Length: 166
Image 1 (spheres, rainbow, N blue to C red):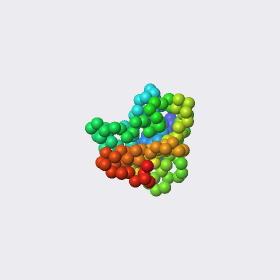
Image 2: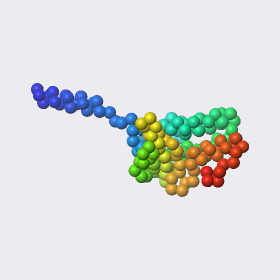
Image 3: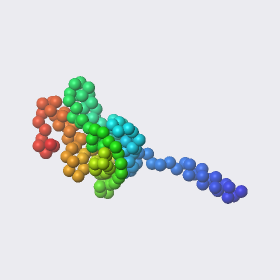
Image 4: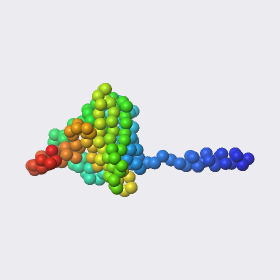
């Protein structure tokens, strides 16, 4: 009887243990970002639902409003897969370096249509959870979400973008 009780107690405690929420650790957050991409048909884009920092979310919302008002889109591809369409294979997500305070860098490497891709995620901790603060092409792919958004906003406002941001 005692074994039965201990077995049930252990089973009950195991049921109470839940996995950490997405955003509890940097790698787990980026892995969660790719989960719907693994299930989605090629061309589907769940990017809008990403857990962005408040600052990046505001920039993205400003871009959406500008595009809805007739402006040319600054981002004409899905930054999560670094392209328009995808066939995600061989996903590997890893820290680029140990987190430093409230910032971390995670790189996701994968193949899409048999081409290698790497995407860099600059993460920032907000309200105790990791959030996406920027997405860029890793290994010299030459694009940066924040820079693209800032350049488009500056151009629409008639300002020149500083050379360091290009």
